[in-house]
Image 1 (cartoon, rainbow, N blue to C red):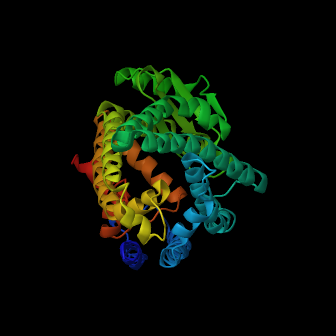
Image 2 (image 1 turned 120 degrees about the horizontal axis):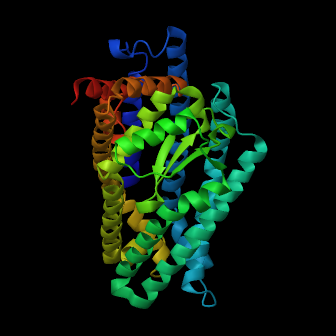
Length: 401
C-alpha cells in the first residue's frame, strides 16, 4: 500500500506537470526561446518524462510482485547458512538486490544517454566512456558501500541496543571525510581537472573574491564536455580546502561577467553558510533515521511480512525502508523548500554586487542550452524542485524579494 501510494502521488504530479507543457511563456521569459526552440524543449521534457514513467512503473511492479510472493524473505533464507557470517549474508543479500536493480535500470540509462540525449544534441559520451564510467561506479559503490554496510552490520550484532549511535558516527564521519577527499580522489577517476589559466577570466574571479572577502586559491576547469554539452559550476570543500570548479562548457557558453555572476551566486551560498547548515541537517536526519530503524530492527513481524523465517538485519532494513518512505518524501519536500529559499538568498547576494543583470542573462542562456522546462506545474515544483523556477528567480532578482 505504501509503495503504491508513493507511485500514485508521483504519477499524478508528473501528469499535472505534463499538462503545463505548451503554456504561454510570461513576458520575462519570451526571449529565452524562439518558437521552434520552445517546441524542442517541450518535446525533450516529454520524452524524458515518458522514460522516467516507464522506469518507475517497472520498478514499482517488480517491487510489489517481490513483496507479494515473499521474494525478499526467500532470498534471505537461501543465502543464510550456519557457515556464513552475518556480515557476509547481509553483503550478499544487498549485492544481489543491487544487481537485479541494475539490470532493470541499465537499459533506461542507455536509452536516455544514447537516444534522447543524442537526439537533442547533448550527448558526447562514447560507448567506451559509458562502459568505463559504469564499471567505475560499480566498483566504487561496492567498495565504499560494502565497507560502510559491513561496519554497520557488525555494530548491530555486537552492540545491539546502541548500534545506531556507532552507525551514525561512522556514516557522518565518512560524509565529512568525503567532503574533503571528493575533489581530490573521486572526481579525478572520472574527469580531468586543470587549474584555470592566467587571463581575464581568472583575474575577474580573483578580483570578485577579494571584493567579497572570499579566500580562494583553487579555481579549476573540469572537462565536462567529454560527456555532455550541458554547463555547470560548483563550489566544494570546507575551510582552507575550498575550491571553485568550472565546467569547460560553461566557459564556452557564457561571457566573463556572466561566469563571475554564477560564481558570485555560489559564493553567496558560502557566505550564508548554506553548505555547512546543509551538511549538519543531513547529519541530523541520518541520526534520526538510524534511531528509528533501531526501534524496529528486531521486530520479527516485519521479517515475517517480507517472507522471512528468522530475524534478519537485511530484511529489517528493507522493511524499514518501505515504512520510512512516506517520511522520506515529506523530509524531501521540506529540504527542497529550504534549498529554494537558499537559492534566492544566493541570487540576491550576487545581485548585491551589481551582478543581477548578468546572473539573469546567464540563467537564461543555461536554461536555453539545457532545453529546460520554463513552465513546470507549481505542485511539481513544490515537491521535487531544489531550485526555484527561472521565472521565480528572475522576479526575485529584479524586485529584491
